[in-house]
Length: 357
Figure 1 (cartoon, helix red, strand yellow):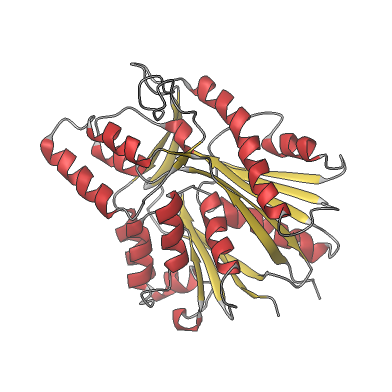
Figure 2 (cartoon, one colour):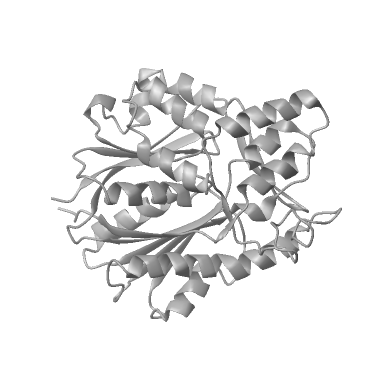
């Protein structure tokens, strides 16, 4: 029988520059109509987000990236090339900070495989090669880079690690998710994209996946797609960064999908919600968490870990789910868990998990 793969531990890291409230002030000033500004203020107040962190340096006057002297304090925002230069500098550094947090929990000797997920930048040699070199990993370490999948990329990364361990019980897989969403600020007077940008922050997470029976045992992965929804979540690569399109229809479409027993079963790996005592739902936004909670008739505290990550960090794209799993790892044992994330497609991907025996 194949070995059971386990997430032994997870380390997380965020930058030390909180940009959430500075962004709110900046975004409000771009809305030309008082009605739009009032809607934005109401949605910002209801977002359930207290902090979002950025790798962008503090401005010359000590302010945020949108203040005088900051990265975005110019009439024409930086081009994609300039943003990618910062990605190449900061993504490896934040990844290594998450690895340091992981190393404080478990030894990281004997790494055989490295899986890295990221959708907010491109660089070659890749983040996987840069991190491997800085860690001094053996050149024989097998590497996999999962790129541009969006918020459910953590599922793909952990799923790949599970496959590796099940085929090679001696494998020790280092999994990294790193996202620098704040590199992609767009100057727009439109309400919907400003509300989308309101959600996103920077963060990195690193996990060790092995056959050792510690932490969370990874179960069967699953995936499904909502029909006629491909345009609801989209990244467009432009000359001034990556433009996120996150439709306001997304929460309602997720709610409608989860109200369909067939889709709900596919989005939970066939598990009945009442049988699940551990929920790791990607914190894509308060309204998305509300849609999952209401549609599946979950207890009020079922998504506490996800809401806590959203409040403290915002949506960090692929890294977010790892932050949620880290909170569950630190909590009571889980008999039957489900990890679930939504992203471009509109797809739902996830896997079952439980606490190791």
